[in-house]
Image 1 (cartoon, rainbow, N blue to C red):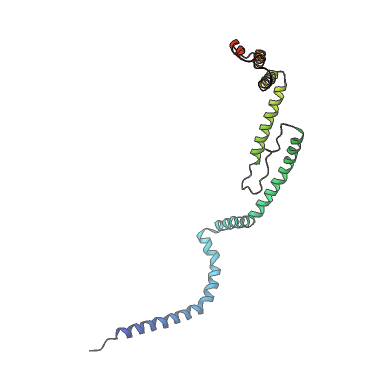
Image 2 (image 1 turned 45 degrees about the vertical axis):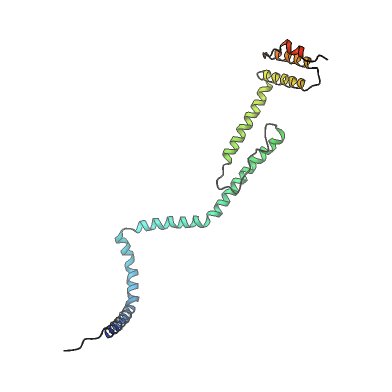
Length: 203
C-alpha cells in the first residue's frame, strides 16, 4: 500500500505551486500588458458610444468644471460682491448722514451701518424701516405745527403750565384755582370742590 503525502508536505507543495504559477501568470500578463493598454485606449471611444453616455459625460464635465471654478473662487467673488455693495451703500449712508446734520427728524444714532462680517446683507430692509420711521416722525411733527394739530399743541402747552403750577411756590388754593381755570380752557371736566380749596392754606 503506497504511503500518502503528509499534511505538512502537502501544505508546503501547495504553497510552492501557488507561488510558481502566480509568478508565471504575472510574467505572461506583463508581456501582454502594453498591448492590452494600447488596445483598451483604442476601444474606449467605441466603448463609451455603445453605452450611450457620451453627451451626458460632456454635459457633466462642463458643470463639474463650472462648480470647481466657482468653489475655488467663491470667497474671492463673495468679497468682491460685498465690496461693491459697501461702495454703493456708502453713498446712501453719507447722504443720510448729511441729512442728520440739518434735519431734526433724522436720527444719526439709528442710521443703519454696513456690517461687513454679516453673511447675509439686510440693509435694504433696515434702510427702508429707518426711512419709514423718519418720514412718520417728520410728518407727525409737521402735522402738529399745522392748524389741525393746533389743538394738541395748545393742550400740551396748558398741561405743561398746569404741571409747572404744581411745582411752584404759590399758595395751594391759588394753584388749584388756576389749574381749574386751565382745565376749563381745554374743556377737561376737572372741578375742584370748594371744601378742598377752603382746607388749603390761603396765605
